[in-house]
Length: 284
Image 1 (cartoon, one colour):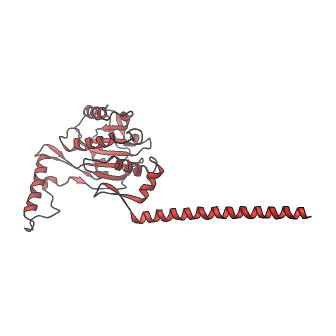
Image 2 (cartoon, rainbow, N blue to C red; image 1 turned 90 degrees about the vertical axis):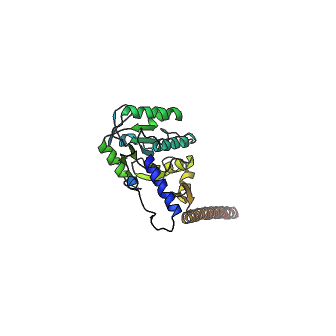
Image 3 (cartoon, rainbow, N blue to C red; image 1 turned 180 degrees about the vertical axis):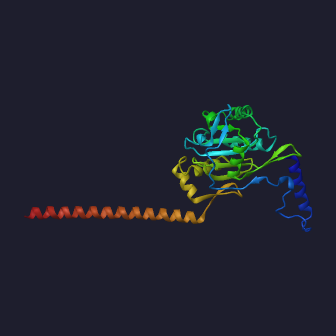
């Protein structure tokens, strides 16, 4: 990764000083970085039957971890990573510590090592480090650190578009970083890249992943009018949806007002009819 980073920086510098040379294409990818990246597969279904190993070395499937109906954040890392994985998990931890919601209560986190040589003991050590810093009740079951076979790892990574490879020159795994949000049924609902995350964006994305099973009515109304913008990393207003919701709200208000007027008029007529009947009876 260090060598790859140096290569990318060199290319960027050359592009800056020779903009007119026409020798650098914007889509150029250094050979060392080929086959590394994330292809977003929104709506993709992960295989819930894929077997992995938990922190105690016990067999567990992804379906078992999602069986309680909570949305989940999937992270793909390797526990011996010297840089990017730690930055991503630290960024996630920092955001989680600022949230009112807690892992294990409203949502789950599933961290999977894509290095098939890593052991359950290493996963347990990583879990203990992060949970001690997190300090929330219920997090022991809410944030899981898994290892697995090459077959299971490849199948999971392929299903979510996570591309990685071993870089022999640096002796490290080459990979990207993104939080992958899963519905309780194991469908990919959103990707958020980078290593720093806003707590409210995470919460709203979990509401979105849950299809309204967690969060408030206001959250669901908000998500009707706003959509996630990957470029800014924030939720932005959608004009058409706001107009639709506004129009629907106006229709409901007008409908309610008309119904109230109708009921009042019907009541007035009933009272008038009762009065007329009573007057006729008295006259007789």
